[in-house]
Image (cartoon, rainbow, N blue to C red; front, side, top):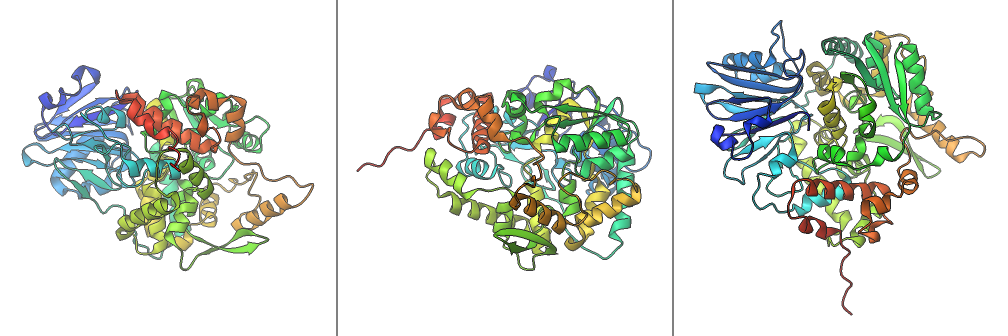
Length: 564
């Protein structure tokens, strides 16, 4: 990886049991922990900073902004923590991990941002608590790793490993909104829903403008990953120095044509990357950023990263979740066998069923997967119990079932490798994690976290924001868009809305990926493309660091036939 954080709760001797200090740009040693960092942009405004003084040391890894004029966010956090304790973490803004050793005070910890947009992996197996941002690097410190059956099943059936688990029993990850201590973990309360009445549109507009202004300090040539949808266009409209935009898709696809119109509207160049074998190629650069817990499929840009010539990258990831209620349970009506949302929230949703749908669970595909591998669990029962347990674990953070659904979705967001990969290659802004916008999300009643609210706020910022509408959303109202989409699918001679992403099955067949990725396990070739990619992700990640490759591969073999 181009950027990495690795540390131990211990001194430099404990650190060098696992890694040489020469592997890192800088190594910091406090009274309780030692941490090394590789980041070519260390010290860039709005980005990774470090500070070591008489009273301790602090490192903030990733994107970070602090109140006032302090240019070194790490120094600000160390001094603010000495004065205010954990309240200082409430004021730290961005997408980050914070590592702090308060020296003689004896306090030392690693903290996530409120929504865990940066993963922290850790293990106690080697006799010292080791932690870091690269799951493979931490897994290598485990002497005798064992596969975590439940975590692997969750990943294969849902595309995401839930909670704090990983594919290896001895390897863990820090939970949503929490901190890692020398011998324990500690849940924080920065991400707890507390709805109130206020002008949600005005507040969202004001906070979006301030959040974008904060992120304008990132330097160099600037670009944006641009879709024809709503979320990335507000970034493009407000940051005048974005020079370039990039979209993955065929040049004549509706999504690409729409993105190009937006780029032209706001004076940026536009590059479309045709979806060839690079789009689905599962190589080390993608698999490593999936960490064995999430799908590398979401790293849409990975195969084209070498052709992206910018320094700072912006994107609209999770804006639909934080501002537009992606994980909310919508009331629907049946129209000729198709469920059409009414625009209202469901009054008594079933959390398990809602989350299964949001995660894209396919009962038929999971049954086929179970039949073709040596796992013996009934997938339908397994995934429902797993999601029920995870929903219950996050329930205390929400005042209602609707907010608990969103909290659970955010805590287990499968698309996070998208940001992880970008941040390894570029200075990468993550608008949705702005502290003010997270607070807006937590304080806004779920019935107002809608596309309508978001678009009204965007129009306050830029009255011309919808000059070019998304190709599959000709109306402001979700229900009208759904009805038109349904009518187009059912009416002869009318063309259906094009999906925004390339067709995985077509690409799988066109580039013979069955043989190239799974040539040694032909019995798996009949699975859906998405499930085959999950298998390849997991196998590739395990092989990336494990010396015992035969054991990780054993679960791919078909079950033995029953004895008559």
